[in-house]
Image (cartoon, rainbow, N blue to C red; front, side):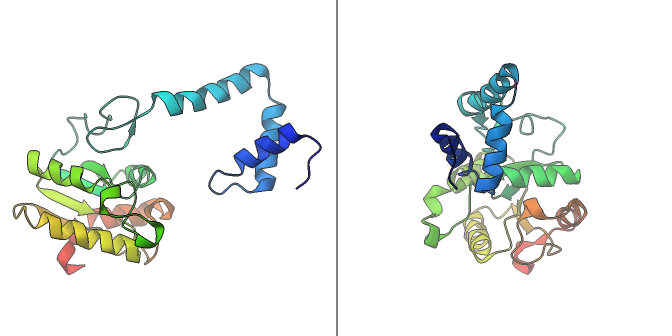
Length: 203
């Protein structure tokens, strides 16, 4: 895509590095920003700067937060004895939108994928095990993608949790199609999968 302005082209190229944004969409975004008022543009840039410099990852569950411990973890009305293990922050949002789950979360930050160079030590698995050891956790729900990588990660975590015989390990019911990511699953199906979770060994 040839543009008359190198400055515009640079902006388009940067915007196009975002997931799901092609060059045409990036051009529309860049032109919209160019034509915005100075105050609107400053607010847009300021929000991105704050996101990068001020947002935290929760010290307990690794969810995104404005404070060292996220509002979900610090909410005494949540069930503090159940932890739902998910791949990423988008999955937390997807499950929260179902309004069917009132426990806590643990965000792994990915799944085991040797082809992508993601190993066990690249994920937040050790902190999960530390939580189970130090907190009064009664159930761990494995809510990872129904893919080969997700299943591999599920199996690894399940084996590690066998060191805690009093902790029940469950997984979401297979209302989720094989190969699907939670963030793209409709809320009703996802909500039922959480409510009707089953023991992991029977999955």
